[in-house]
Structure formats: C-alpha cells, structure tokens
Length: 383
Image 1 (cartoon, rainbow, N blue to C red):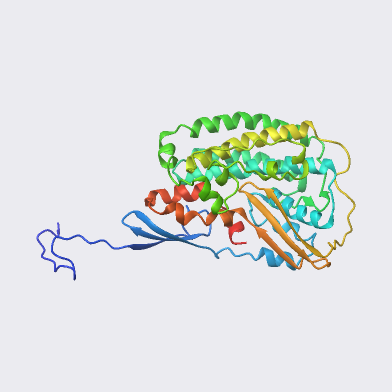
Image 2 (cartoon, rainbow, N blue to C red; image 1 turned 180 degrees about the vertical axis):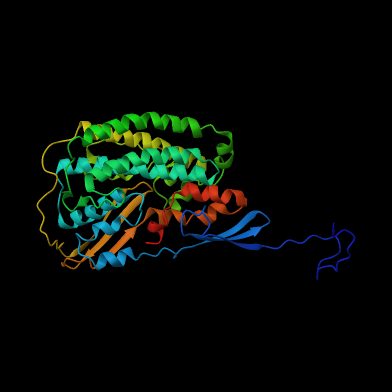
C-alpha cells in the first residue's frame, strides 16, 4: 500500500521547519444546504473549526412584496401578505388589515376581533410547531417533526373550513373577516384543543431533559438583555433574554384589550431558553383560544366598507405580536385605491442581523443550532 512516510517535502516559504501555521478559511454554507432554513447563504470565516466571522447573504428569494402592494388595490393586497412569513399567514393578514383600519378610522365588530384572536393564536401554535419540529431535525432528531406536523395539520384543516385554503388562507378583510365560523367549527376546534393539550405534554417529555439536546443548546448563542434591545430583537428572541415585552400586553390591539395575555419570559438567553419560550407560548395560546371561544360575542363579523377602498391621505404604522416578534405595516396613502408607499417591518429580518454576533467564537457544529433558534422565514427576510 502506498504511503507518504519518509518522503522529504520542501518547507513552506516563511515557515521554519517544524513550525505549524494556520490560515483562515472561507466556507459557504448554503443556500442549497438543507440546514439553512431555505434560501440563505452564510459566508463563514473559520480558524480551524471556530467561527471568526459570518456574513449572511440574502436575495435568493426576493419577492418584491412591498412594491407589489403599491401596485395593487388595498383589498387586493391582503392575499400577498400570506407569502411574507408563509408560516403565519393569518397573523400577516391581521397586521395588514389593521393598518388600513387604523388609517381609515374603522373599528371591527367585537365578534370579528375575537375571531381574529382565535385564528391568530392557532396560527402562532402552528408556526411554533414548525419551528420546534425543524429545529430538532436540524440537530439530528427525526421523531419530533412527525409529531409537530401531525398537530399542525389539524390547525390547517380548521383554516380550510374557514377560508377554503389550508396554507395561504386570505381570510381577513378590512373591517372584519371573510366568513363566520361554519356550523360545527367551534366543536371541532375544541376537540383539537383537547387532543393537542395531551400531545403537547408528550412533546415536552420527548424533548425537554434530553441530554443531547440540552448539550447542544444550553449556554450556546447567549444574548444578554441589553444586547437584545440594542439589536431590536422582538418576540421569543427578546423574551428568552429576560425582557418582558409583548405587544398584546404592552400595546394591546383588537380583542387583546379584553383577553389577558401572560407573556412567557425566561432569563437564560441561550438557544435552550428560546426553545422553552416557544413551548410555553403554545400552552398560553391554547389557553387564549379556549378563553376567546368561551367569551365569543354574537353580532356581525364585519362593518360595511366600500368595494373600492380609498383611505384618506396620510400615513400610519400598525404592529402586532406575530409568532416571531413585532410585525409592523407602514402605509402612506395619497387618497387613491393604491397605497402610495408600503413597508413591512418583518421580525425575521430584524432578528437575523444578530446572527454574526452570536456565531463568533463558536464551533462549526454550533452554527445550525444557533441559526435554528432564531426561527426565521426567508420570505419575511427577503420580502
């Protein structure tokens, strides 16, 4: 068998015999890599296996949603919001119609506000289920994603009964919602809630306390409270670092003015804390759905609005607590049917900017663990 032993090789230029020399290496991670949560490219600078620097490169999924909104009528723009954070379409639509309603001075009926609360909290659960299932898949565990997608399918079936579509629902309307709950829907939702409560406990038992999972996430990707605020982090990313800030509580909107929310906060600030916050939020969202169904008022589901909506001249910003943080819509209206300017404040985009800071000094094996804990959706990053 051939061997290199005993071969005399010339010394490297500028390196004394017997002296070791290391060089930095540039490594492209993605966009085709299955662990990069979609079309995101990370340009990593490595010293051995240690990350020295990271440059996230976006632009592979550019959708131009904001410019599309400016070239569609106000009512036609609702369905394009589904494509931003495509794991939270109901929440996206709520932010959009809320901005238009704020600009026009419209207050949706109480029943419509409660319907929005129920669908939004179900959507939050569905988004967190994908976040946790795919996160565990990134770290090498296959069973959790099967369990989480099983429960998510129940939510998508409820959405299909409401709007006719399982994914891009197009259900919210300026002044209310498209349809009231069909016959038997509330009973089906209650049955799903009862089953999910048991399934959530099983999922908690499966993941929490797992030695491998804790070793990969505890003490990894630490963000202190001041750093989180400085980077503009919101949602579970912020609350996992000990900052008690939730727009449903601090700036309540719609039915959240009547239904009390208990923000889920942890102090550790690492990847494990972000996982725990999302698990706790699913239990809290389940409670909110049940409270809203018990307190669901009667009455109309929408206000009378003209077919051709023409918001008055002016500008507005409306934000909700999405599954990933503060989702804000900024509009400038010139009085026509088309927004003169539309801007989306996507929490995935804002939260992503701290990634290079979190990766520095960690090993290559920690890159996916830290990236997955951010729970970004590239449709919202590269909107």
